[in-house]
Image (cartoon, rainbow, N blue to C red; front, side):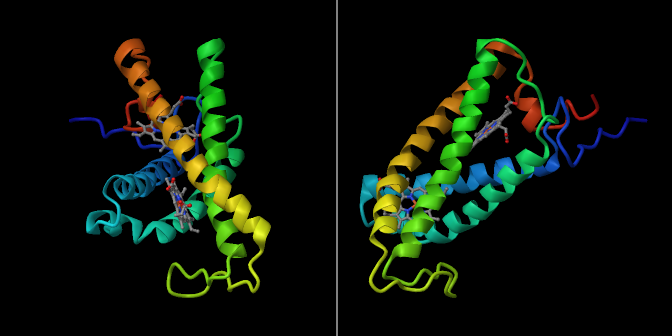
Length: 191
Ligand code: HEM
Ligand code: HEM
């Protein structure tokens, strides 16, 4: 008789991220991929139908991302001191700092877009019903701050994500320390 695989805890533990963190991490990663694919295609192809397919849902997907990111930050705070440890040393410090930076840009990017949408003279209704009314006249500082931060910070976030994925590759391919199994699979669940 084969033993049933260990089930994952709901909350995080000191050796594995639990189901809620994983759900948030991978859903956010997939939706980010959608956002960057669309904006990348728009840059490369201009107003092409393939780019339009992705970009047409940009505000909707971005608003859903905002909600998921807020939940993720709250969940991270609720699990503070109760998550896999990065250990001592410079690499661990870099991991902690890198994750903190990722959290910062994850919040800033959609907040900047929503700030611009709030201050704008156009109604913001990504799902067909009004979320923010039109401002007459527009709230200039909100539009300017949002405008100057959203795109720039989004590309910075893409660079940080690339570094993050590269480092996961280094952990898996060179150091073989099982970092990926904290966030994926059930290998560590029974520990
Ligand atoms: C985390 C979620 C989001 C990501 C990763 C993201 C990413 C991006 C990127 C990479 C660009 C292209 C910038 C450029 O052309 O240089 C962009 C543009 C844009 N985004 Fe987002 N976005 C997000 C959320 C949102 C939200 C919530 C809204 C709506 C309120 C929004 C509205 C726009 C608009 C209108 C543009 C085109 C104008 C501009 O370049 O700023 N985005 N976004
Ligand atoms: C293919 C894409 C991705 C892979 C393979 C991946 C993998 C991982 C792994 C293995 C961890 C655990 C690291 C550790 O415990 O030291 C982790 C944590 C983390 N990842 Fe990713 N990730 C990906 C995409 C993303 C994206 C798109 C974001 C955000 C925009 C992100 C943000 C984070 C953050 C902030 C953490 C720290 C844990 C937390 O506090 O939630 N990741 N990731």
